Length: 173
Length: 155
Image 1: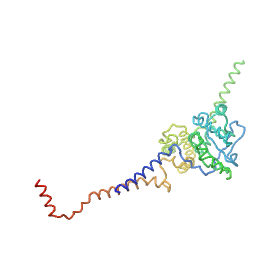
Image 2: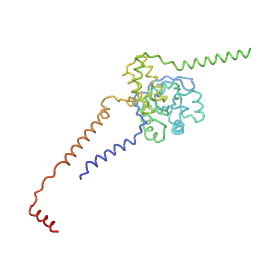
Image 3: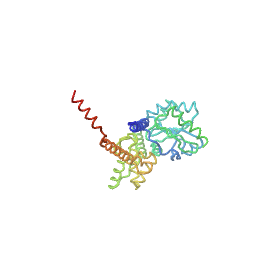
Image 4: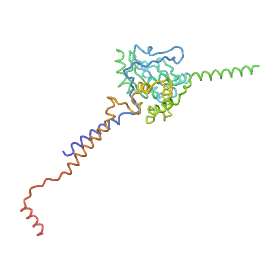
């Protein structure tokens, strides 16, 4: 029993380090969770109307920051297509630091998962939403609050484990 | 005549393009000497979230450029250090600050290492004391000892 204490300490330390290894340092938790979506007033991609966070209220939506120049966005694109067209999820695209032509071409080539696309050409909304690398996806409840943020490409696992339950609950809020 | 007209049209168009380009990116307001110093100091205390071990002063990532521009504009507008820091943490969380603030949530971060050090020192002291403690003399049967020693000699 001489080694009881050192062994307990060692196991504790290993558990702590093991937990640390499973955390992804690239994922920085957003301070915006639980807060209302930051304000913006931007044109849609066609330039035919202006969009504000008020337009996103009333039902849960995904707000997906993407860009035609973003490699991770191509990776997640099939998942977004599936969510939109098979699961009927409302996804709003936020075209981040991009041009209208490039974004339109990109969407023509890869398909349109978005109910609507907002043009954030200067990245001002991105700044206010704390975006630090596209793709990033925010889950908004019906009351316009941010419920969750997916950093990096959307995956079906993330959808199933984190987002789908929030979207279902968000319908009620 | 047609050629002159098209040339003029082309010139006008390029002018229009350059004007709209200039309008899209408003120039940064100039900073005074003291503000410039303040700016340098502040950007070397904010973390670039893309290349996480660099400050936004060191990083060339587009995000760092945007954040530097924000700091620049806000300093030009006369906003205080605390306000600019608040602006950053509102968007990116405490991680954006290279030097975390001292508050209940960060107490473990600030003092945890010293607590661990103290624990390690205490443990070390206890263990060295324990091993230095002299063994308690045991009552020895002198006759038995003599017997054993003479047996040893007789061999």
